Length: 327
Image (tube, rainbow, N blue to C red; front, side, top):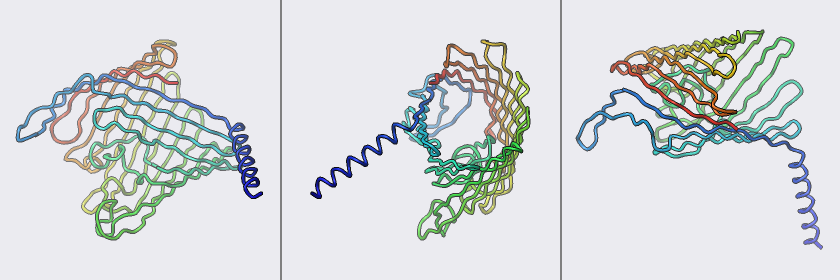
């Protein structure tokens, strides 16, 4: 009798589960990228007592990026799975890029992320300030994000929070001995009025000695004057680490859409001072890109850039031809 009851309960639960899945909507999308890369950078390495210059290969082993997104929606709930597959010689790996679980309320939404990354826009650093993912931010940890739109004002507010275990003897995410929990916070506010969007953002963390963390404030201006688009950003960074000075960085991009079928042109600049870059000199990168549609959802882009990493060895030129297919 009990066994029959358990079977009936199991069948009932299974029916409910499958009916729920049937009511859910599943959407998939993604992209695959393959590129040819070259550079005249003089990179010196020392191996086995011998020192020499490393050449830049045109075709790197693997060097393929695959982005695959799965989005599931059911009523007020939304879930996304976003693996990023990198097929390089070293390493070949799969990493998460923003998978989340979200619930929508009448006037807001709450997002739970296993790897919440809240950075300051697109400002970039070559040195340790950018050694994690390009700019100062809060550490990637599981956390929550609250979005509150103000529709009559075309404004949107988001607040994020997560926590990080740090070692007491260093105040950073590395060390030994006892640990303590530190909180990390971020907040952003954006306002849109055609053709302009203005956004401000701030992040702060008590992680003291990890040099790429601290407190950052930034502002972004986007203007859409089709066929011309403009994106300008500025960030001020105050690191927590002892002996580090405040720094700042800028980002700018101007895009131009050519006549239908002829593609797009873009000029992009990234720069930051030596304090933000945490190297001997300032970092800068000026790049021009032409993107041409080869077929529906298939693009080819050519980028030529002048880069100075801020290591005192001057600038160099790099170029990249990239093929990207989206689905």
